Length: 136
Length: 87
Length: 265
Image 1 (cartoon, chains in turn yellow, purple, red):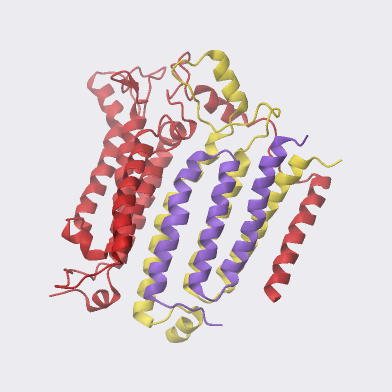
Image 2 (cartoon, rainbow over the protein chains, first blue to last red):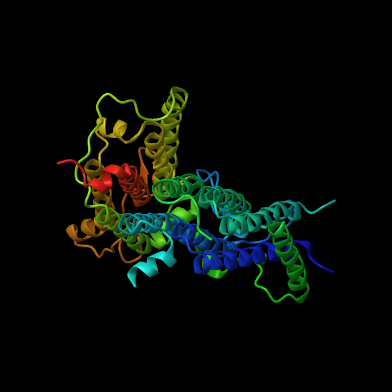
């Protein structure tokens, strides 16, 4: 007997693996530098999704779904509410690491965009094959 | 009676499958503007997936960055360089 | 047609392969419990009965970003700083640019009116996200990234000179970003300085009192929970991220004709 929840989670992970492969193909085999930048952003997002997938946790029961790591109603929290929170919330550590990684990734991508712009200003093309010819 | 967890994760799995299609066209497409649009579609599906994986913080940072800023910046870049990828 | 077959085969491969892997059971799949480290974080992120280890923030992610793993985030901010500086360094040849006289730039009137309304809303939402980062999902990174959408919309709808005429220049944004980064540094060593001044042991990036060091920033300000350093970190990071991205967009929106000419004399 196949567990449908396991099947769904496996499907999500495998889709991410396929995305990783397509993005790597884009980085290595497409000639345009702009296309390479697009593929690099897809690669980074897919890696982040793997990290979030590591922190996911299954539902305890249909009435008790897993919750984000945010404690609601904190002002009059009791010890029982706290115990239930830590029994149901997902892992916050991968989310905290991914959070900074996305913003830093955007900053690094902006740097790549400026590099590509400068290459186009100097050589008049963004095609790596022509740039290779120009440099000898 | 279907398990609600299967329904919720099923939406996530559908989003992941659709993102595979979007990534394929984003990498294959020769017209760079359309490639950026496919990349934005992929980002939207990833945002839905993050929401289903219980990460509202990531959704809040991912939607403006990957749906708003990335495509705009790359469209700026395309408008200043080349529109088509040569075969 | 070729693409349709390729997509169909990829999707079928994923569906069949995951079925196979489910039966074989060889893949890492999330289970009903999380790792012990995550249990520790979830137990202590807001725990008034365990004051020696808690961060006093109901939001687990912000507590990890700025308290438990604060040093990581400070160095991530350094990487962000260096990436923006590198972008500015590449665009350094452009010196001066001013408004073209008597020429209406930008998109149509409808777009500009809508942009006026939505940018206000975007900035308001971004500030709300940043200020409530320690209570609800959000924080400095999220708020800063959201607020950076507003100058980008203005650049597209109104042109580059609209912002320059109103004083939003690269230099002003550099000053705001430097103030934000300096604020992060000051808050990081604030408790340490207090501890040194009062002759007690203290730590860098300390938030709440620890067993060895009893000093802390106040967790409540006027009866409202601000979680010590987290609130200040979020505010300063908001300014650093927002201003940093705005600098790069301002440089990116300079027309290519002016950028190649090296600016006016």
